Amino acid sequence: MQGDGPICVAALYKFSALPDCGNARAPLARLCCAEGVKGTLLLAPEGINGTIAGSDAAIGRVLDHIRHLVGAAGLEVKFSRAAAHPFHRMKVRLKREIVTLGEPHIDPRHGAGRYVAPTDWNALIREPGTLVIDARNDYEVAVGTFAGAINPQTRTFREFPAWFRAERQRLLAGDATPKIAMFCTGGIRCEKSTAFLRAEGLDDVYHLQGGILRYLEEVPPEQSLWQGECFVFDERVSVGHGLEPGSHALCRACRRPVSVEDRASELYEAGVSCPGCHAERSDEQRAGYRERHRQESLAAARGESHVGVPMTLNAALIRSDL
Image (tube, rainbow, N blue to C red; front, top):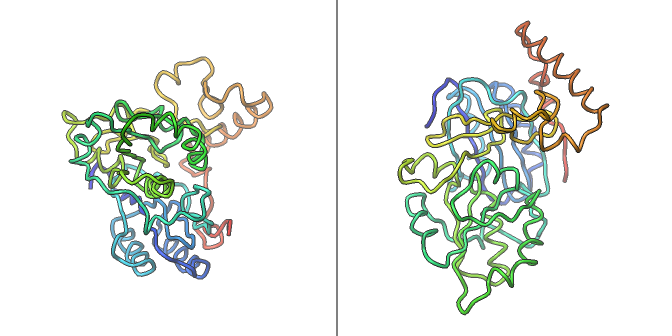
């Protein structure tokens, strides 16, 4: 388990038939609240996805419950550590998909591409003619990516199928169909995107097992082809090799990562705006953000938590999209 700190962070997913996910929701939320575990878990008929954090013992008990729920074999879990709790609350949500591609016929359990271990990834993406595709969103790619990877410039994962269909002829031009190597943060988006490509008639499709996070954990910096940092969906914002905390902060207005350079911009104001969203917000909206930031700062000075809600079952069961 990489990194330092008393908090165990577990990023997990598994595609598994879970038709009774509605009834599974409350017991899972109740356990997380009882154990003081915070984060987000998504339940859908196709499985489970999320990131949670807490003490080692609490995370162990929640993972045991999840393994009983979806089956122990194949649950993908990536552990790291944090100096402080990276989440403010616990959320357990019901969704139509645990990661939204918008292609209901795609089943990663039976159609995903071939796994490639982090130690074998460099050799694959160095092969002449291999197309390396970043399956993440544009703001994530801006934080870091693999050298030479194609950036689809998608705002959401749902846009990936339309991007590929529009670019297919250009991407596959040539006498031989290329190998396609895909990667994402923890692997879940590649389970679906490679299954989508195979459904589109491509067979030579591969994806990085365990995602960027496992690569950064297992591949030494001196051998790495990764450039920059990796955006993560919690208060750490970004991590580097060895899953050490990165240099990015989070814009509280738009939730995008902001670099050291971004924070030097005259358009950046902590808690209020960043260069990426300044033109997208009104003065009235920024005034509201400014007041929220002031209240949060006052609460922090008193040693209180302004952000978040009490750890209760009703608070954890906040929304269903099914």
